[in-house]
Length: 269
Length: 252
Ligand SMILES: Nc1ncnc2c1ncn2[C@@H]1O[C@H](COP(=O)(O)OP(=O)(O)OP(=O)(O)O)[C@@H](O)[C@H]1O
Ligand SMILES: [Mg+2]
Image (cartoon, rainbow over all chains, first blue to last red; front, side):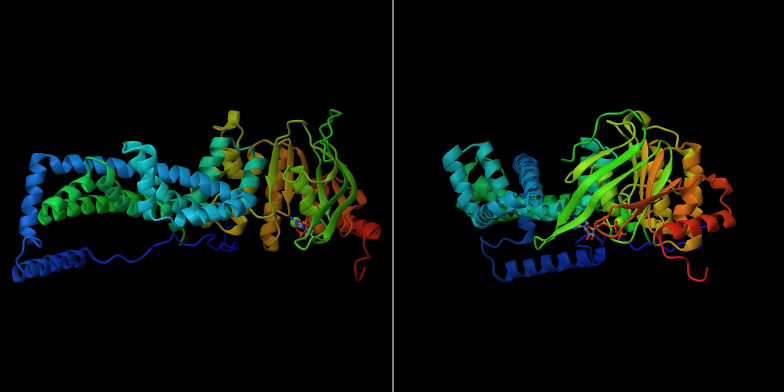
């Protein structure tokens, strides 16, 4: 009964950024080689400003035991999370609005280009001057740096929305929530994933600057402190710990999330 | 303009479009519909039959409430709250939802948990509930679109060439399926087609349109009951239809 039916072509392409990953032993080998090179360099050129890996490791253990590193790391992570959420929600709202309203888009596009090109540092300085050296200014400044990027990506997504799905939803009288969840979100999902990915990696770098300039805790603050003490081992210990945490978030949260929500695309042969 | 008419209580479908035009990208006005008037009696199946590009899809879009920019009025059964079962020219299923979810999402609130077993079984879809539309052939996707339109127990059924670009045998099979489900629970139905045989097989009424700007050339009512429309009856119908509206069939 189904024999005479021809298979339908795949309607959509693969999600972006798919690439064959290197085998795990390759990754480990690569890191090991870096460690050896580091050790070699530190032995050939012994100086306080270039500590060997072992010293960094010991500093790390010390900071862990004293509770300092976990405390500052947690504060920084909270700031990353707060500014990330803020930037995604506001940026997505702006981007989707502009993508759906051509006139508004034409009018506001120059603003977007302007904001995209203001250096992060300027936004941070102005935020602290205008709103004081407080938590809200810090998080707001980080978010503001990311919002234009998110808006541009989401505007692309909104422009790519297929009106036929919206029309189907209107004929079948989908409620507002159903439209959001079953029509809008699935179409925007690849764009949200792209914005999140580039968002996280931009935000966690800017957060350190914000902390360095106007906060009295967090990884950025600590790094500034150790800079004044010329304690390179501590700077490296904090940096590596922070990078490790951010990478595991990327590997264990962002990527699996992306995979589950595109399952319907992969299933077809 | 474009006011939906409120008077009257009949469960029939009425179309009175004085004019409908589009402006092209270069600013040119294209008249698509002009003085178009027809109706479909309650629980009858009608076909709109017209040449390609004459404005058939435009009529359905107006009836679906997707295009309000026209002069005239239309009235759907169960006005002012008609439930419309729509089958679009393409299946228009959500690729990210399974077959069953696609159907359930369209169900009105109070029927969200309705039992779909019988419908899916008749349409031969019961083993495909959890498949995604991307895993279906065009014929199966069309079937799901039809299932969705019927599942909501619509007040009116609007179908836009639902069997186009399928091979004849499959199209015929789907027409039979549509008929058998529709006959279980007849509703006022309007289907667009440019296949005369299809129109003769399915309809109680054929509404013949002119080329653009479309108006009604004539209405061809078929009183022979569907199950008595065998090979010969259909031949007769085709001949009298052609005599009335088209050049005679070559060789007859
Ligand atoms: N949004 C639009 N803007 C401009 N012109 C349009 C638009 N939609 C339809 N048209 C024009 O209106 C005419 C009728 O279109 P419509 O899709 O209703 O025809 P149709 O009878 O359904 O054709 P087909 O048999 O090919 O499906 C066409 O000439 C088309 O070019
Ligand atoms: Mg059409």
